Length: 166
Image (cartoon, rainbow, N blue to C red; front, top):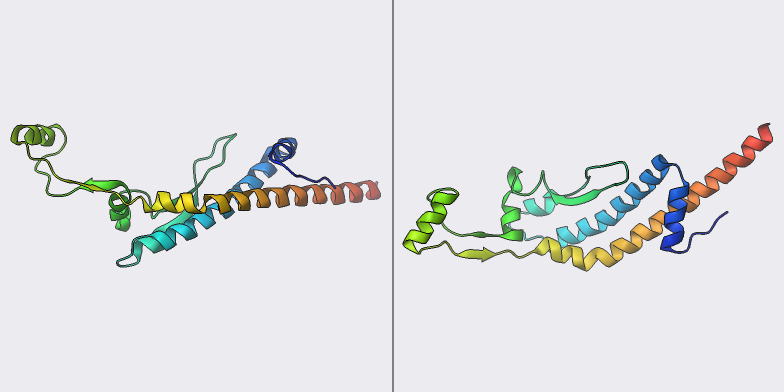
């Protein structure tokens, strides 16, 4: 049985595996880490009705051949769905009514000198990530190490049974 101790050894062990197996291990570990971040996001979410807390989700992101992505997001995405307002709270917004859109609004504001006041975002999701990222990294590393060791054990067991059958 092989022992994995550091990040370099993890990278080498993942590179030595089949790409399909290593992707599954990485995706599972990232999902476990994202769940920790999601739990912290739910705890820090601004709550009036509880809809924002309920809308925090962990989901798979876009995949490429050499990349796996896991996201912690709100509902269907920022500025969409029934929790669209969560993005305004996170990133900030301008208060007041828009009379026009785009260039016309900017021209009106330049002409009259009146601009809508900017409401700063609370950045609660970013702060939740910063607070929980250390624990999430530890969980990701532990899950990856455990997965690599389990795969190595399974390979050894399968290798022995294959030689016994011959």
